[in-house]
Length: 187
Image (tube, rainbow, N blue to C red; front, side):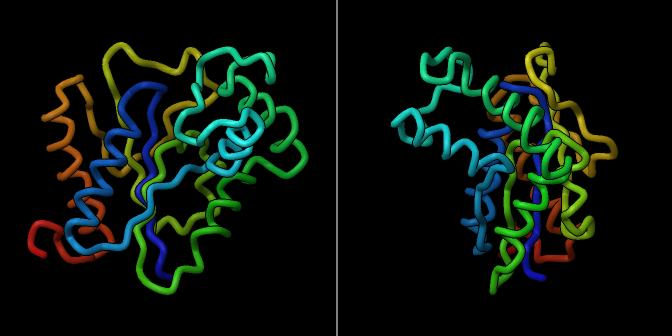
């Protein structure tokens, strides 16, 4: 198996996407094959197509007439009321594994929306680095996800972007050492 996963877990707006982009930049610059992915990516693409918008321009928390709610609320409802009851609580993790595990060269997948223990169970734990991101004042009050148990690394994002990006370098180094891969700073 050539797929490895850095899973970022934290409440909305804690900086997961920013930290994921920085991890991708660090690893790519160091010669690793890296993909920034989302557990719910295919569902988010479906929403973008439905609304006639580019994937990156879908406003997650703005009400949309077509959906009759926000895209975030729609995705949560679709997930909790239809997909998980009909296909199992590990549906999203199994789908992520199916679409990422058959890579021909070693690839590190940076996942910025891990939020349920059942989602990560289909992934081989020895190839996973689970990172909890905490940001003072941010919590799960508007989201169905929660902090996952037993993270490998905890990153405190206190809104100092330079410090958070430096901590991302440390997080990447930790993941590489866990997987016994060459240190990114020495490549």
